[in-house]
Image (tube, rainbow, N blue to C red):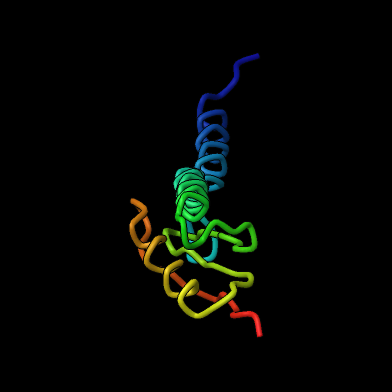
Length: 105
């Protein structure tokens, strides 16, 4: 009862392909490493916002995808909105900022 090595090798190669492709980055998804980088950027941005004397607000939502930081939520005035963009651009790893903050009426 001899097992052929070719089917076993083919099965292992095919299994490896599925495992490694699950971690690969595509146009619409991030690799595991990119996800972790983006999570770190998001944390740093939130900390910078809370440390800034002009922005100490919890009403600013932050999400990051492939280095692009999106800000959402509400601020009291246009100066705060502009300041948020300035602060975020100082964080290492930020590629660009999409400032979707809304100034309260």
